[in-house]
Image (cartoon, rainbow, N blue to C red; front, side, top):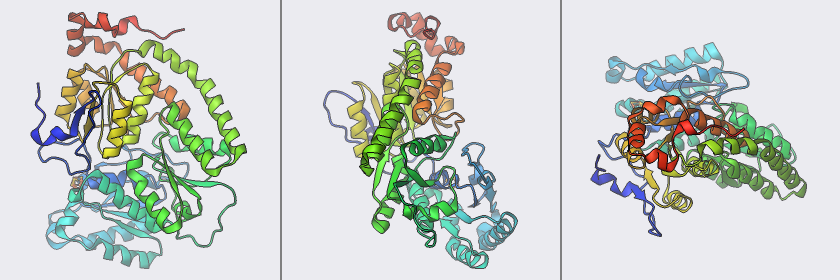
Length: 469
Ligand code: SF4
């Protein structure tokens, strides 16, 4: 059995009685532990790249540009400039003599060719080392072309993925409030923050708000547009999903424009309903509240029987979830509960002490709660807790398959919408599809459990489970 590294022990907790969780979170990853966390640059790119009418230029070696649209997709209803991945492709020459000239030439060529509404320039590790003055180059190009050219200070080694979110929020904040000419619309209006429209989620959420009678001024950044962000200061509420990534922007907008914010999750039944009710409560409009109640009722009537059908086959299976943000982890624990599946391992990359306390509250006895995990730890917990299904992203998928357990993608690579009420049905279907695959009967873990008679006792054998009629 793999030992937990000494320096990691304070970031792993097993729920036991009332013992208070004291997570040593929010710090740099332990050197050598091979953290699952992404770098600062990745954090900022995740947040900014769904802005579809901007150029996204990665200033650094070509390897950093690997986070392309193809593996971190975000849908757009209009322009698709964000699907192109640009890099200055720095080589030895620039590392020695500096990359500013190459950056300026690349920006000039790209802006002339694509006529974007703005350009974001991401500084990567090497830029921090060689000391290119990215800000000065951006300023110069901005003056020449008359569009915002925004440096994103996201040198990978500067901190954690969370620092990348912060860098992205600072870049976005530069745009917010720039449009001083368009007058504000009347009526309740919000900004949606922290949804990236990976599989059309932003559209689902926007439609809910339309049905409630709430106008959406801007989506940051799913299906995002530069002009909408420039008008975002006209909203009267910021609704922040995925608390880790964009709370910082909401705080800055509250301080500068007096716009309050609320933190929500659109994953799972309760959290989606609570997100919508929370917005309706904020506007204190009885008619809006009635429309929201009708919406929730209608959606629940539509999806609940199907979710129950999946539950009939999935109940008793053990789930593990390792995701980026804590709000997604909360929602997953609740979503699995709807499917009758206990979450036996749960963790995230960017949680705070407060987040882990809440996770402790909603998790069952014996659940392992982990901050900033690594592949070896996850493998150990999967084996120890006899996990049947792991939820995670691209870096967790091979861990699950190597361990012979089912996997559900709940990250940037997914192509199926998991948000909102219909997202709960899609999620149940995904979990069912993966868990019930006949391939798992050949997995060593399943064979061991089968041989020990455990599957018979806990009823987790796939062969016996099928959907209720
Ligand atoms: S910014 Fe640094 S850590 Fe991030 S991908 Fe590039 S080289 Fe790697």
